[in-house]
Structures are given as structure tokens and as C-alpha cells.
Length: 170
Image (spheres, rainbow, N blue to C red):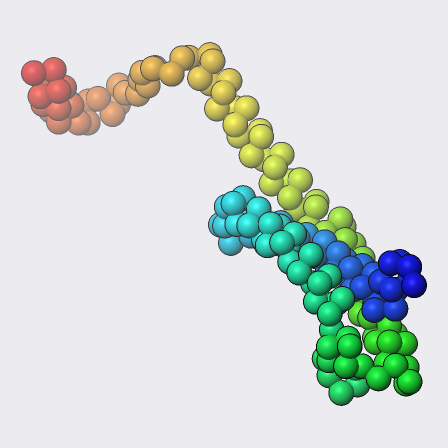
């Protein structure tokens, strides 16, 4: 028996596809939600690393165990006279279809609902930073703001202004 046919018989390939699809979906959700909650890029990296570490472990688990109607069993303890592998394969196929449907739904929401809001916020942030950079470039980082005092205001509060100016200059 070749390695490829043994992988197919033990449903390792189906488990790998299901895990990769679910991991991709989870990474997309993490990349969207973690910044909203103020979590750093390090936490996103950690989630990706944990999923990558889990991939070979889940493949080993799929190689060693078989999902039967009675639950998980060691592969060597499974009775091959029935068709539990076919039954398990159908369950895994359904799981893959559900995960891919969720991924497609998430992709549509992200592309058509969340992306325009992110783009608008990004454009506003860039415009604000550009205005700030232009002001700093025009006037320099160390500039003085001058408040114009109108004559009417000066006459009404001339005593206070004289006192405040004299105290400030002293």
C-alpha cells in the first residue's frame, strides 16, 4: 500500500484540508478583531504561530486515531469490516464545506461591509497627518502663537491686561 493511499484511507488529507481552511478563517477573523480590541500585532503573530504548530500535531492525531460512530478510537482498534472510514470521510467533507462557506461569507462581509469603513478611516487619518506635516514644514516645530487683542476688548479689561502683562514680563 502506498503512502498516499494510506493517507487517504486514514482521512489525513481531509483533516489537513479542514484544518487549513479553518485556520485561514480564524486568522482572518483575528486580523480583523484584535486591532479593534487594542491587541498588538504580536498577539496576531502568536495566533498564527500556534495554528502553525498545531498543524503537524493534528496530522499526527489524524494518523493515529479514527473517528467512528462510537467516538475516537486508535486506528489499529478499528474494525475494517464495516465502513467507518467512509462515514468519517463524509463527516469531514461536510465540515470542510461548512468551513469554506463560512470563509466565503466572512470574505464577502469583509470586502463589502468592513473594507469601505476602514478605507474612510485610513483616508481621514492620512489627511490629518498630512495637514500636521504641512504646518510643521511651513512654520517649523518651534513656533509662537500670537493672540490678537482687539481695541474694544483692551479698553474693557485694560486694568487686568496691564496687570497680567506686567506680571508676565517681570
